[in-house]
Length: 467
Image 1 (cartoon, rainbow, N blue to C red):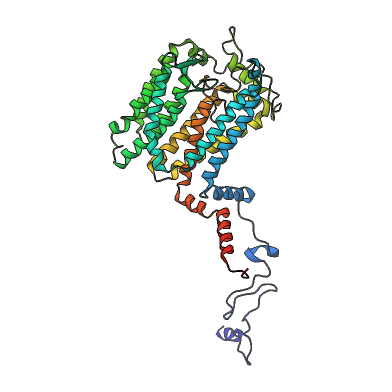
Image 2 (image 1 turned 120 degrees about the vertical axis):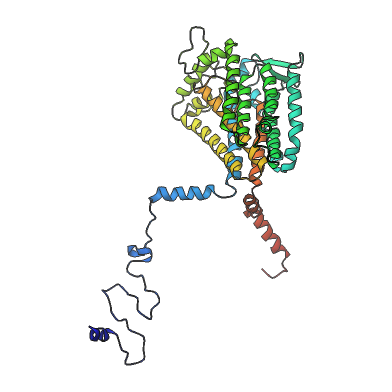
């Protein structure tokens, strides 16, 4: 055997390239002592026949998931999602406000575009507020927290003054600004509670005081209860529900223990039950949950006709402007029940698109709140996301018959300048917070447009003839 091994080892008799000790089957090259890497001609790169790469495990779905995950992890994804979803919801809302309000305007002998023009004016002003909020530094947002809270509380008090406050649909929550314009201060109270609460909790966290119950609750909860009391004096329980959701969101972000949540929620439930039980209108709204018949006295007329509008839309709807329910059948078609008209005219595809936009906006807000190291940004972004998401759920749930009708508009979508202005400012806040991320700042600094301008400037500075 030792002699046989020596016989197989080549002994060169002349100068030339080395010969491998053993040649395998045709098409397969083995590694020799002098060759560093064997060629891969027969089976191609990666071990697949014909030189084609072997597809990754999992197929197309796995590859699509990885691409979506990488795209979502990019620094500017939340920035673009918040900006795009907010603007798309607003623009689609303008279209649906015009379609849903035409018949109501003609009913009151007004031009068919009356409500649309008012909403468009509010959207233009709101776009300016969004731009201002997105460009303001964080310290200025924190400095405005207390003035906005004081002004909102004073306006809520003025609502209850006879001759200044006005009643709309049984709720004393409006102030006349002259002519056809009115202001609902409670809508700005939501923004005020978020900014002031975020600044308060951030300062207490810096001082390590949030581990104590008294610092966690005081003065956040008492001030929130004062705002809730001013709102409930006007009878607007829907806005009070949204304000309560914002309060719970801030407490949850601050790390409140479960026992505290149970206690505060129990107190809020008892108070809400008393307020509902002592008001016949609120009791009737709860009785209309899941109703399929208007009832003998038409007490569930609005809820049932909202379901009728959604049911008649089908997959793709009857078309823009072709709604039947807006011809006097469905009350508040352009405000609280605009989602029902959207389902009738745009069908299931339209309603799912609206839901997807709100889901994207909410998820991007959660990402901003979860990735920041600044406590003020975390509390404020979480509060804004809670506000928009909770209000959308309450409104859409009422239209679907799953929740009682609370009388709150669909954010950025329903008619109402008092609701649109602070909401667009809040979206601007989320954009500003998304821009404050260090990775997002670096990505914005080297955007293609800015890089192209820099390169063009350098080209102009070159001497002539050096192209």
